Image (cartoon, rainbow over all chains, first blue to last red; front, side):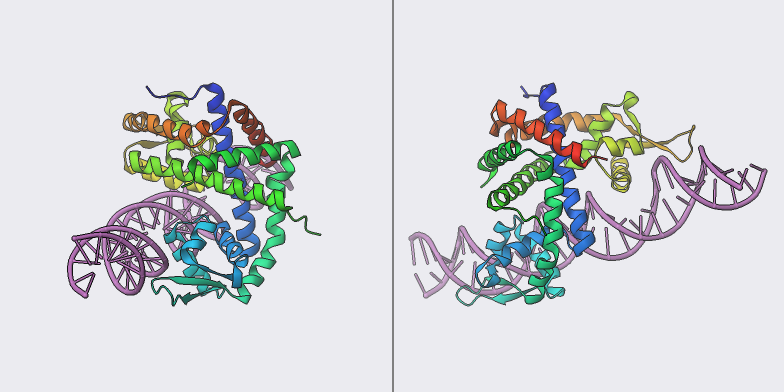
Length: 149
Length: 149
DNA sequence: CATAAGTATATGAGAGTTCAACTAAAATGG
DNA sequence: CCATTTTAGTTGAACTCTCATATACTTATG
């Protein structure tokens, strides 16, 4: 009844878990060490920095930063304490809230970015041939098409 | 100076983050919902179940389950509370500790496995062609060769 | 052999995540 | 319109993870 994994699938699956975890740990360690933030916070700052006025509704920000609403809400609270983000009430829909990236927040992001990009290269792209990068892109697109809401 | 990502690399990178996070969230949600444990605990139980006597030294278990030693120590403490694992002093090296999978622990793993495997298929293998699975295996091997200690 | 280094693991505090519950404000629909 | 349902976002508690530190034992070194 259960469609168990055969040996090769097992190996691939475990290798996938190991590899993706290694990449994520490398990212998180680098950002925590050099910029004092976890990768999830970095993604929030990036999303905000790319938005018009560096401003975004909480729910849209959650979607862009691949965060649950609850996680985002907690995270923005911490980022607000650091002065990197501030919240602003939405007048047209008064349930809503905007998150706004402050100057300090943008500066923190700018300071963190080079080290982060180096780590991304080091932990993923440098390990792969251009052909493999292409394959990876297709694989990730296929997975997202299956799993994304 | 910084080797920034070009547009295509950016897209690949973000797609990678989205896809791997979707897979991990799907796994964790399924296991938490249906078996009451996070994926990290599941990996610990799997590693133990495959060891001779279902017994392993803490440090080897940490390596096999891709866990830090501290994380493993906390996790085994919780698993011990549930009666799924017990610790046993090591006589030849009295600093050491064995983790032993109990009958209940094995039963919990056996009960969780089918649903978990279904989720693995659903969230990864079913999305990919056999060729893509092969590519993924090579990509993960390359990443591990770069990042593994 | 005594002491310094190193190894195996545990522990506690602080931080992030999840889940369920909660508030408040729209939208919907008799 | 009023009652219901839906949507936006927050909150608190429980749990896991990380990091630094502590503990206990073992191995190396002079």
